[in-house]
Length: 335
Image (spheres, rainbow, N blue to C red):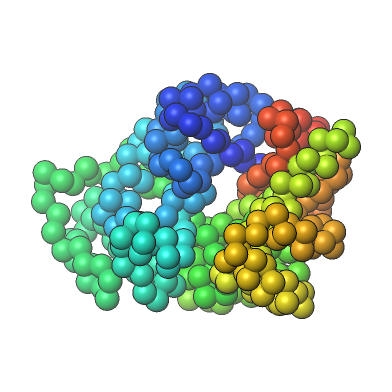
């Protein structure tokens, strides 16, 4: 099981030193997310300052872009990293796609299936010389002249991982993508009862024996109680936000926590963020996230995910920026 580290920068140029340290510290990959900055640029910088670790978007918002644009970015980052890029894609939610990105939203699982199929069709044209003749309900790509065809890549094509929470998108991931990115808002129970069955359903269509699973995990881990308390405080706030979002209520429903979602959703519309965190009790905290000492956290990670996931992508809520490095040292020293 491989452990990846998040890289968050205010300036893509800062990624060079951070990425180098992440690689030297023993992580297997680094990942960006699409927040206030573009997720691809820090990986381009990181590619030039590392040589072994995987470079991953976790995630880039697919519906804010089109298949041709993503095909180009994926091809070039694979080239720049010498074969180390994983393109992690996600759908986001309707308000952001329509109101922030001014892009169309409809039938997200169906659209995402077609998006990935279109990207792979474009890559097939470049890599194998196939005619570009993709005609779908949402995307059409039928023109590729020699001037715009980069040709066969010496490093092969990148993998595409798809983020999924509910069974529909999860099944699409196993059907057309190379891997699944499990959202960090999950429990062991929701993984076993919702995620894995949906993956198996998609694999019945694709028969992809090399399909991989990467699990996002929220962690509050420290040996000092004061630091741990601070991390838990931030973690409760994040869980309150996720729990208020309709897209993630399927996880709460699995545990009979539907009322929590309704309360959190109501408070979110009132902007009562401090009140929301108070609704996250210890049971929810411990089932959804990983909480405890550094050694306890590494044991929990291994116990929960070693038989399910190829990769784990932890997000630490510690105020101490050294927390990820303390964790990976302990994890790599396990028997």
